[in-house]
Amino acid sequence: MYFFKNEFVDAKDVQISPDDRGYYFGDGIYEVFRVYQGQLYECEAHMQRLLRTAAEVRLQLPYSNEAFVQILNELIQKNGLNEGTIYLQITRGEAPRAHPFPTQAEPIVLAYSNEVKRPLATIENGIKAVTQPDIRWLRCDLKTLNLLPNVLAKQAALDHGVQEVVLHREGTVTECSASNLMIVKNQTLYTHPANHLILHGITRAVVLRIAHTLGIPVKEEAFTTGQLLLADEAFITGTTVEITPLLEIDGQAIGTGAPGPLTQTLQREFEKTFL
Ligand code: PDD
Image (tube, rainbow, N blue to C red):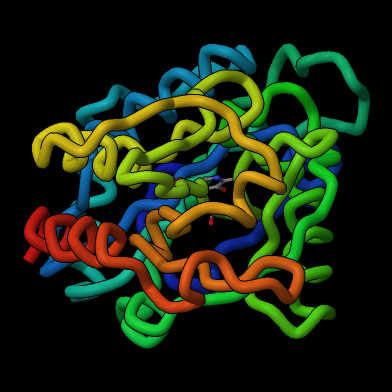
């Protein structure tokens, strides 16, 4: 079942108009939730980010926070979802193509679930990446549609035979195509500050919380691609990738080229937050 325009319907009954502003302009916002054992993970944090994005792009959400959560939980139940993701998208509505906000249109809500297993192989064995310039706009903190730069970046990685891309602005590392990036240097954890240049990842926040609890020094400071290469360990964080070790960048090994001990400690603690 999908949730579309105020009701639960079969996938075949979701009919999206060509006049949907998401279709014309990418004029919409979204969230990707993880579901572990039938439960929404970090639901409140995702909802707060959705609310903030909606306010920043001046999109009037059609439901309250509580009503959204109820819809998502009903979706989990109706689909018998135990382990997977939920995609939630709200566009500014349907109207003939014109740039100004439409005066009549109602926001359109779409939500569905996917059964997805945890990516245990890459969590254990790590991934490789290439660097690419970060050509996105200057509000990467907002979870909006219009993901063409992310799509191009991810495809560039695949074309290079690796799984991910590390984005940088004139040599300063920001994040990856759909995840945040952290490095370990001399037992200290570094990650880009949560400003307008990165998405404020929920997984990133959980990992920083764990690091504080464990007494691992954290510096929310930007680092360069050169510093990434010289790091002792590196890993990416995200709803779909959890904590995945990053072993190689542009063909050069990071640290020993194997998942690092601090990364593995954080992975073990991260698992405890939902297992
Ligand atoms: N992406 N950075 C970017 C650019 C992202 O798109 C995402 C998430 C993250 C990680 O955020 P979180 O820990 O809250 O998932 C960082 C989702 C999964 C996506 O677009 O599919």
